[in-house]
Image (tube, rainbow, N blue to C red; front, top):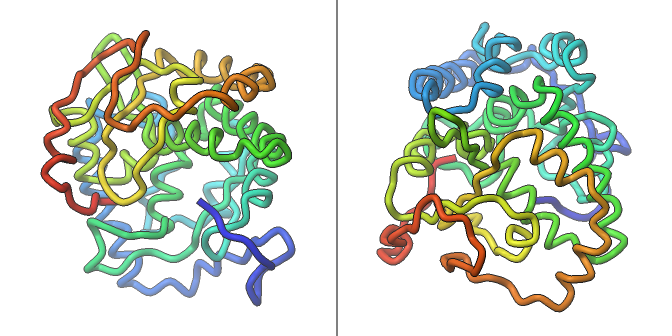
Length: 288
């Protein structure tokens, strides 16, 4: 998700700002601690090993909201990535350029205590706790850089809506197949207490094997739990798919209709044929 226009006052031309870590209040640090503790208690056995290793490597629990300069030291050593602070959502071309250059843009604000379970705009907890641990994994780090490079190309082709679906169903809401069962790696799930349970345990959503064109033809929800999750076989397989030239893929997608969000399609590898009971009943706003 992004916006258009010029950088707001105080932001640089690339939309970055200073994190200004010293200005966080104790109440804001306490919100981070509350969110962090409840997620780390439930994620073992749910999150993929790469996420859990990254969480340990970056020591994100120390003293509340992490200081970007501190975690960037370890992150750069591991994969050459860094976290840069931005005032909020940024234009697509700015977002892709940051990713292509191994910079992850993160909001510096944190939600209020009364917003622990839902926030419309991604905050520092979603961005840093949810996204950054995976960037310590070399394979996923390469995938994210390739996605940024692909995004700059997609802008020129008018295919951004297709590429946005790839990001949504992998980086934000992706599941992974492992010998121990399905695991979470998407930031929108690992940063959400409620969706960490729903994505793996609830009978409502479809869970389907990842296929690039299938994903790019599938709309997504931004206001509630997902009706479908796509399952990758490995991070390596995800990276290899993204490193390929999408020119022929985009050409085929130009004449292909969307696949409705709750549908099964010919050729789907089905992990769960969901009841869709949650969505049919009207759902509710999902936790971030």
